[in-house]
Length: 403
Ligand SMILES: *[C@@H]1O[C@H](CO)[C@@H](O)[C@H](O)[C@H]1NC(C)=O
Ligand SMILES: *[C@@H]1O[C@H](CO)[C@@H](O)[C@H](O)[C@H]1NC(C)=O
Image (cartoon, rainbow, N blue to C red; front, side, top):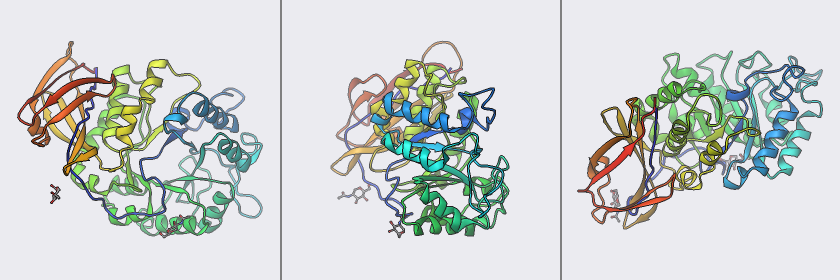
């Protein structure tokens, strides 16, 4: 199985400058929170599944758990409703309205509840004529819908791209962003714009995307499996030269939700997702059942040192720097910076499935860790320190099998 191991800390290294993107003051580090889609999908039968259906109760339960179970204390803050919250029709005035039986108190009341817990409120819509599940989309109503979101106290908007013209997105996503801005209410803007274009052979205009969106999906929806995690990691590795330069404070690539604590991942695979999402400067948006999570998974999700890598203020997305024997190494420059040399977070990821922990040994300088003053190492999941190494020393670790 899988594996992961390590993130290392270091002393010393380099400074970097970011691309110029949307400046609405939000998402200066990757957003953290909880989103319903991967775990709860479009479950609407509240008679049969009262604890799982997309309803007022589900989001209050999750807000309660974020606040009372330690998640909010380590940075998880947005409670985000995905598809299937809407009624099938707009109201008599053309306004969006939630399904009345599943959200009987309305969206403002739910928003107020989430805010009362010290958390923030996120809501899904779709740029096209319909959401992916068939509810009303925003086309033709963009200004009204931006105002409706602001009036409900929305802090984060996820705008999907089903039932939309792919080329229109280049105009529509920025237009809706302008309407959001004009409401005067700061709202994180999460766009699905590039993934729909990419999957249909259109090269996304990332220069425009980073000026419009705080985060954006590049690749398909995450599923509850290790194979799917690997396919996402492969996508970001294969496109890293194109994708990485667009990430920075205020604007992030989004490889989709954390699925730790669900059905598909072992403990080592869960550490691997947490480590990889942190080294990739990815939003940490969980989709799981926070009311029912084994302590070992909760500890992975709440590991403060790993989260600190994710939230590193330099905002540089990490990259794959080494592959050998089905083991790969990713590095990300992080604080502290001394003498113009950054520290690094390092992830060693194993795809090997043969029985015992596998030893890899590689010269530090081959990983790009070239500071002549050397580096002090700490394993972040366990908090174990490992002494100091020079660039001409071998970096040696054992990683658990994954599959
Ligand atoms: C609107 O855009 C301006 C210019 O980028 C920015 O300074 C301001 O913070 C934005 N306001 C909101 C509410 O997003
Ligand atoms: C710091 O490092 C960068 C990148 O290697 C280099 O371009 C820059 O000149 C260095 N600055 C100083 C003050 O050494």
